[in-house]
Length: 272
Image 1 (cartoon, rainbow, N blue to C red):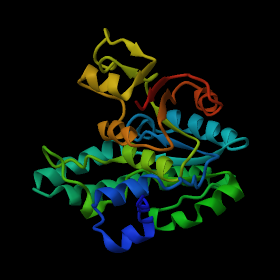
Image 2 (cartoon, rainbow, N blue to C red):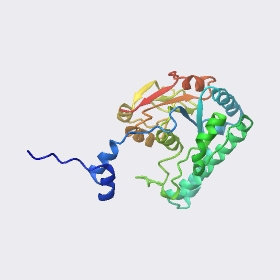
Image 3 (cartoon, one colour):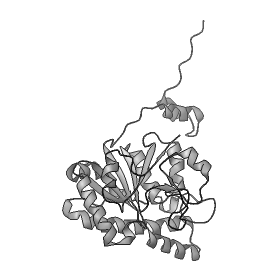
Image 4 (spheres, one colour):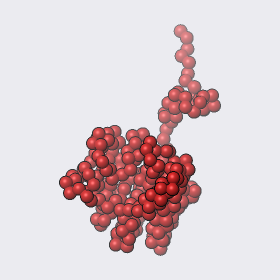
C-alpha cells in the first residue's frame, strides 16, 4: 500500500506558493493564536458623544478612568467627533479622495487623544501614537493605562468605500482592530446613549432599546442608524479574540467601571 503523502509545512508553503493560495491560507488559519495583551481592556471614548461636550461630560469620565485603572489595565482610544465631520465636509467639497480624508480625520482624533492625555497626565497616563505602539506594554505596566488616537493609520491607503469618499474605517473600527490584534480582554465603546436602539433616540422618541443582539441579527434588522460603525460588525465576523463588544453610556457615572467588571450595563453585540 502506497504511503500517504504528508501535507507540506507552513514554511514550505510560504516559500513555494502565492500568498493567495488556498492551501497556504488554510495552513495559516491552523496556526496557534498568541494573545499579546490578554489582560488589557480597550475603551473607546466617543468624540462627538463625549469629548465635544466639554468639561461637564469629560471630567467625570476622566475621574472614572483614573479609578478604573487601579484595578484594570486600560487602552483608551479617542474618536474624532464634530471637528472631524467638519473637515470631512471641507475636504469632500474640495474634491479630495478618501485617503486624504483619512489623513485629516486622523489629525482630529490625535488632538482629542492629546487633550485627554493632558487631563490624565498627573495620573501618569501617557498618550501614544501608532508609531510608538511597541512601548505600550511598558506604559501599561508602569501606569495601568495608555491613550491612543482611535483612527487606524491607513492614511492614503484607506480602503475606498463603495459610495462617496468618507473613510469607512474610522475610530470605532480602529479601536476594535487594536483590541482584536492585541488579543485584548474586552472592547467597550463609551457613547452618550445607553446602547443600541431601533432608531436614533435623539430624534425618534419611539425608538426601542436593544440590550443584546448578534451581528447577523443586527444586519438582518437593516437599521437606518447603528451606534457603532458598520465595518466593526464585519470585522467581528472574522475575529479570533474579541467576539463581543459592549456599548455603554459614559454620561451615567459608574457604568464604565461596571462594564469593565463584566456587567451587562448597555448593549452587547456578539459575533455569530
